[in-house]
Amino acid sequence: MNPDAAPSWFASIHHFGMRGEVGVSLFFVLSGALLSYPFWTSFIHGTSNPTIKNYSIARVARIVPATWLNLILCTLIALYFYDIPVNFNMLIAGLLFINSYHYSTFFPAELNGPLWSIGLEVSCYVILPFLLYPIIKKTGTFLKAFTTLVFVLIVLQVVVNPWVIETFMTSEDGKGWDKGLVGGAKAWLPYWSINSFFSQFLVGSIAALVIARLRKNIMPASIRFDIAGAVLLLAAVAVVGVRLIPGAPDSLTQQPYLSPIYAIIMAAALVCIAMSRSIYKVVDNPLFVWISKISFGVYLWHQVVQNILQRSFKESYVYFGITDLGQWTRLSMVVIAISVAIAALSWYFFEKPILQRARRKVSS
Image (tube, rainbow, N blue to C red):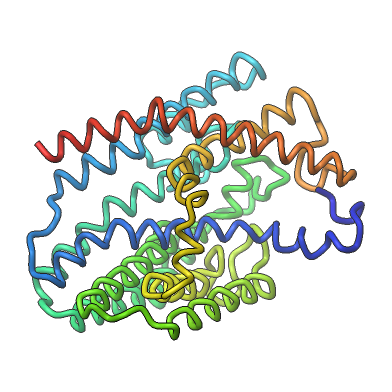
């Protein structure tokens, strides 16, 4: 939607809508927390840790089949319907989940830009056990484990991130979103690096450790956690609304999505919500629980739907291209409805059966 053509009351909605990209950061925080929690629960209670084999099977089953299906179909649709030739470097890099390490392969499918993040997510999956197992083995106490994680986060932020930016800065030749996806990737890299995204993932892991420790003490849910959680969520919205510049690294941290500032605020909110009396009920409502089940499919398919709609039916359906608010609303509803429908079908008939077989293999 072009906000200049919309009523004045729409300006604030558009402002925050464009900044909804921080959902990517929240995804990495949640992912880091959810995948770390079984490890930290075992650590806190002194029980046996999840095995690398079971962890790996679960991750492969959850990510690989759905991503491969999406990437291959996007490549074929682009070739046969829109005469976009196959870039085999991009395709192979995407299938191997290493696309995010070079601007020439960063976006592995012309029709589906969001696939860029999957490679970084898989990299976080790989790194996580190599970090957690030594900490679990060597520290022995919550305080030492927590201190070690915070120390690693500080090193990634203060030492590694400036080095990555200085060492791997892309050239100005062909750089910029006006040059296409490859030019856009050159503008994003090296700010959109594995260092930044694993830092956000690690912040989620720290939150999971804190939650596991609090729950061991069988602390009763306290209204103080509700109040703190609400304040933190409002703080996150305020920081994003005031400071975030869409599609650009933060001027202070030189990382996307206000990392690690936003990630830390949301991780703290996650701890408070997990220990709250009432807020958790808002988050765990039946609709949100169902959406969470199909959410990976929504992420994989929503921009495919958008791009097909734009290329085949509505040429102006691009960033800032729609000037009629009613038309924008109808197009948005169509995209949401089709994306959710595809994601639901993918979940019930493709993703869920694969996960069930993987879980049976893990339990056997």
